[in-house]
Image 1 (cartoon, one colour):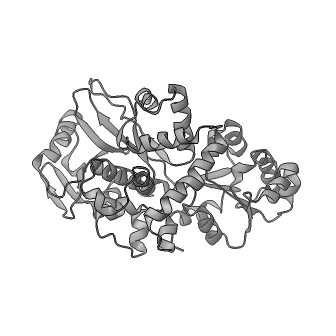
Image 2: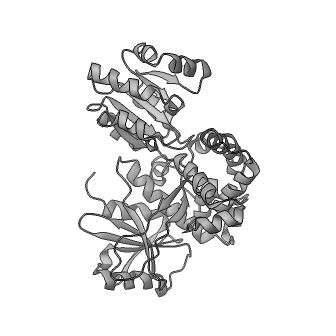
Image 3: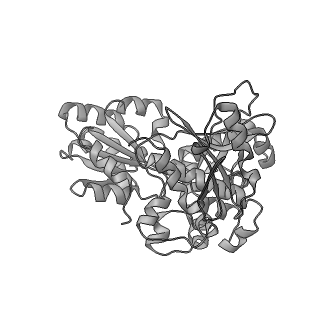
Amino acid sequence: MIPRILQGKLLKAAKTMPILAVIGPRQSGKTTLVKHAFPKKKYISLENFDVRQAAEQDPRGFLNSYPQGAILDEVQKVPSIFSYLQSIVDEKDEAGQFILTGSQHFLLHEKISQSLAGRAAFFTLLPLSFDELQNYRHPFSSLEEAVFQGFYPRLYAHKIQPAQWYPDYIQTYVERDVRTLKNITDLSLFQKFLKLCAGRTGQFLNLSSLAADCGITHNTAKSWLSVLQASFIIFLLQPHFKNFRKRLVKMPKLYFYDTGVACSLLGIENKEQLKTYPLRGNLFENLIIAEFMKYRMHRGLKPNYFFWRDKAGHEIDCLLEYAKKTVVVEIKSGTTVPKEYFDNINYWNKLSGGQSKDSFVIYGGEENRHQNFGNLAGWKNMLDIMNQASVDI
């Protein structure tokens, strides 16, 4: 097993909370992690039809058959079980009773979130992070390799080629999960929608335009997008809330949790294609933003990231919002660094009173350099920014 940063947070939470819930995309390593972290817990997969049927028919009896608690995998398959979990853990009043995992964001369901409120610690496990792979001693030869390869554990554990694995993953898990959540009758149309989303990675989400290009209604596009979010395929980066008396763009930006999935949907077949691919910069930006997300989530923290853009076109790719400061990050895939890379950072700092020491450009090269108007960081050192910026966690 590739060691996961989240494990320490899980073990700590299990000392105080009766239920731990670990959600995230399929194949991100949730089952492997919880089995490794809690080896004495009985493992139950609700993917199994017979087990699921037993849980649905007699939820209380099913849960009572595990007096020492258990790991319940893919628990969203039996929504009725949550209210029974509530009463059982309340009666027993012990920490670390049940470990729940799910590949869909079941907290979006109000009844479920109410059942678990105050009784569960919630965590999100995304695919492997850059620092986890560094600790595993897996170096990337180039940023193109990192973007194309993606970060799903199975690729590294079994040395599978991305071009072989991702199409099967998309067909087996993404499309199947979506069809269980929504009654999508025209699968080919949904496949087109997925590819159109990939073509918009790192761009503003204009639902009307997306719907028109796909040939579906605005409400259908909104519904399908919410399913992709609930299944941890895409996420939306929200605009920063301070306007400094400027008119701001209010649309969110669309990103994929894993660039390997995006590359596969775009039809990219090898890393060499990325060197001249029109969306190379967008995919590189997606890689960095997704790594920032993992850094926070794998440490049990909520994301604190935004982008900023005014109507005049001044834009900051990522703002890291902390209690006492805002860290400014521009993301450029080029390997040389013209002075213009810092133009928007300088504009932001003059507008906001920000400082150059909290300003960074992450680029496609490897050199680190401190400059009067900001800091240059090679893409392999992107986590140094997080380590410098983060408060104690």
